[in-house]
Image (tube, rainbow, N blue to C red; front, side, top):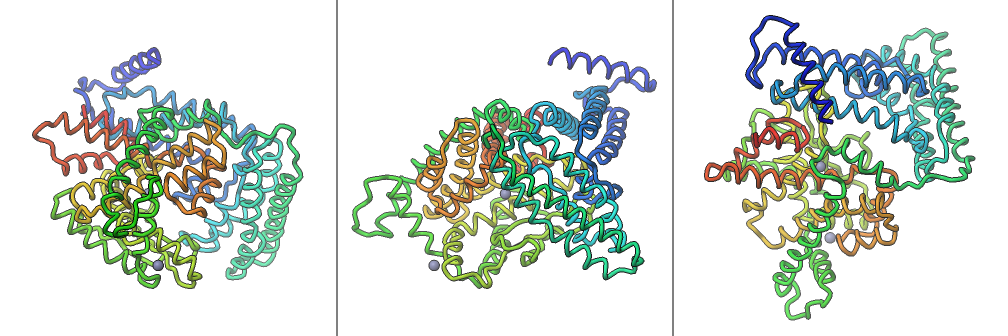
Length: 583
Ligand code: ZN
Ligand code: ZN
């Protein structure tokens, strides 16, 4: 590692000598070097889109819409060559001499390229995860997103179609003893996307003036593509692998994946230990609060001897306080001005009044996930609106709506607004857009983004949001426990062989979740890994950083300054922000 660095420094020094006669820079302000780095970034992104055309399409760069790469060994070699070449170019820059913003970009690019090498050389999920092969997402995107005239999009669709049979032939050649859970997922997801090829495409063609003969040829290709997808699903169904791989990732792969995806200064095992300690702390606090609240809600009734049962009963009782189904959307919307006023009053951070959040009813294509989410414009669509999508409970059966509303009771609903909107995800996004970097938006760090949203929940309550009501704190602890237990669950299942029974026990008895929610979480952890740890890891690292910053600033410390400075670096890994912030 050290040797590596020396080489990079030596190369950078040579480059600086050769490039121009400009005098040597003091650190962080060499505009020649930073200009050269910006040019490199542009070349990097051009090259990236050539090897990742689907990704390009999904973020709004449409030059490669008509390209579908066949995922064979030639393609893997091309991606490895790309990674090696780009890493070489990257190492010609002296990291420490770059501006803060470019140092973060450098780290993000390097991490990405190394993760490409690792995925191909070591993780090899193409051999055991049949769901990694699926063409329908990008086809559906091209068909449904209205970014260009329909005929243009359909012609892109048409040329990609021709490669679908070869795509799935290449997939079959690589798969070997696949994970059963991921095989089922692949069958469901691939056949789930068939209507795009068998119906939607032909329906759209009819709306155009594309000549009939051309249309006929395109429809024949769509049929062949659909057949290739069905054949793939049938082939997967018939597979009887002798030694199917376990869905559990195992420690070696997990540790590496964690380091690439989360980019934490901690190892996965350290984060797991912190989560276990945090769970014990939260339980202690919840028991204290529940004891305190008991007489208010249960009068003279005896307090349950089992402390987790005590907490569970308190939560159930408080959950009954929820809005009416028809008021779900308006209740969420009404809270936003209250949150903004509170942040101003307490001077927690600057909220840009020129960037109001557009609240809208969740569009139909987001299909049925009630609750709330943020839709931000892609990096190539700067002018686009940011929406706060709020789901509607219209037409829900009474008992389903009731169960949902108890989960999102009047306390949790406020926490949800803080997390998703202000000062959580939405506010973070507004700050991130002030230091625009294509690299940071393409390779944004999920743990920082989720961690910030979780951190703001606590930050608001610490500053008196909700009038310090014990009910509010108890409900927040339950919500925070979800993030904590996501981490415990993910690591335990993938590294420590946790059984399903133990997992359900953790979620229902120790994290107070409903059976249906716990069952859904088990499904999620059987087909994903690492992502569930992002919420708690980011949260913990931000809280730790705030402590360190507080110490460093001494009597000059201000929470507002911390929040604003932290956000000013964009959606970067907390460990990189930490280095720059404490410098
Ligand atoms: Zn009710
Ligand atoms: Zn979130």
